[in-house]
Length: 458
Ligand SMILES: C[S@@+](CC[C@H](N)C(=O)[O-])C[C@H]1O[C@@H](n2cnc3c(N)ncnc32)[C@H](O)[C@@H]1O
Image (cartoon, rainbow, N blue to C red):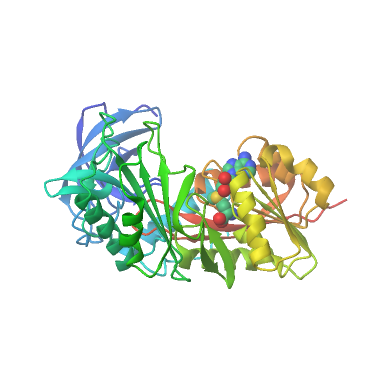
């Protein structure tokens, strides 16, 4: 259908729903327009920014009639800060939009007329849910400040006094580091000129253990007395590890080798009664409460009876595989990051789990070898990044012939296309699917699905 609108045109339209990614969906003569800043139930005045064959994009310039679901955002930085997008949408409307996104993807992309969708699991806490936050240093009228990127800007950071997504402790630690930087007269790094020293602060909290790790990222050079920073942070008894990393490149990474300034090289988090070691860069789901619920559901879907051979693909630090191990015969995990695999092996030892092994490798290339080492799996759990089971991994995973696949997804569109291939080429039916809200006020939506292999008719 040719677009009935052109770039630059101003239009008034009703927003019907939220698309995956967070833009409002409206229509002009039946033609879909994705509207940034439009919420379901709004009538907006918008400017068209792009037209394509099947849809157009626009930005809301004015809300003509606000949605009854609009609320006052509690955070004073809302709108300016790039962190949260939907604090102004009532929480029940946020989760129903996310549930609908998963359903729509399964119908439209997965071609399942009536997907076996279970109700979305709402977040246990709508605020204060993050166990990790990465702040950037910036300057303010009062001196050095710490905060987040301005929405849509890579080169501008706004200093904040409080973030509602972390705890009081997280906010207090950030304040202490800000005050230390002012006292030490250290300059923030400027992304546009490449000058300045202080770059990022990462605070990770083991929410079930009360242990905290703090990582400071600077430009090269030792321009501060490390002992004094440690003294400042040790005023918080929860801080168990203080680390320092140097970023020599203009890129804004925090995934860098870190030097231990004080304390333990890792802290621990507890999930489903198991302990997991947390280093500055190791991946761990950032919402502890919801990670536990997600893993519990993955365990239920896996339906283990004690003897199964389980593959945990994209296993990260082994959290899912290790939480299944006590109900399985054996667990084998595969993960591309060698550092994460080392953590997974360490986590197995830490919990005295003897029937789980972890291997470094690319899922698309290492499954034949894994089958040689571990035998064919009865149950496969996959938890891929947003791209889904990209490339060879999809067909290799389908070809393993497991009776059940438990698919943990952070992107319903790639989930839906993978489910279609697993059904059409490998005989798996989607038996259950449950969306999860791990990240309130953001466009992210996770889900856990159970795929069962159809019984052979031969
Ligand atoms: C969404 S995380 C899941 C981690 C883990 N299951 C958890 O819950 O903590 C996805 C993981 O896949 C890994 N990964 C990405 N591409 C991969 C590939 N081609 N083969 C193996 N692992 C990969 C990433 O390093 C990351 O640890």
